[in-house]
Length: 236
Image (cartoon, rainbow, N blue to C red; front, top):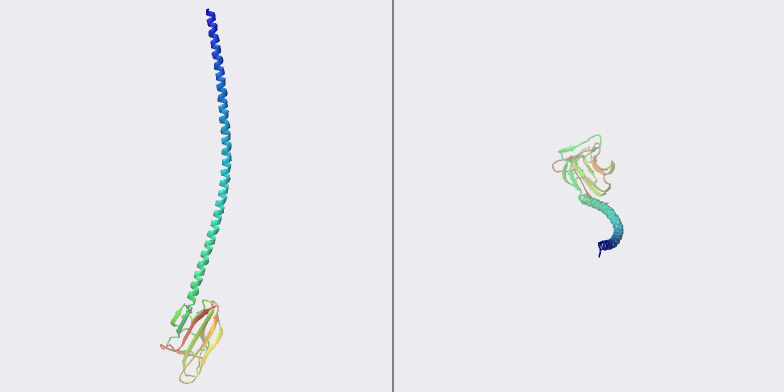
């Protein structure tokens, strides 16, 4: 075999190897492209699935946010209702407490002093300063006034004493400036005593007191002859 033939065979072999390599390279490129396309398709499908899942999650989150807002609103309503119930309960307790305290209302006091009060040329309010009992503090010993703290029926008694004289012994029970009843006696000699009592329906804030008439007198000393008493019978 000549040198040219050898050279020709060599070239032919290289060409075959080059063609084989090209074919193999093309095949590999095609395979690689197919693999890349498959991966891209899988990634596209995965992204699409993720988008759908994200959308579902967003909807779920929106629904949860709505539920949370509704629960918060409901909780605020419940808190407000509980606060109202608490205030109402406290008011009821306070009202029951006041009512319980109001049921315990009674006072009794004497005129005090040592001797006669009067006579004067005008009516005066008798102030019974010597307090024996003042449960509920509805009677004021500084003014002589009883002020009703609750609406109800009250009973009042008063007893007045004085010496015999041309001056009568008298006192009238007054409600808010209105004359209700009077106790009066007159004898020229010896001690004299008179009394009266009445039950009244009083509204909250009504005032009851004793008024001594003009040109009359009353007497009291440590023996407490002249007294004024009252108590609540029942609430209306």
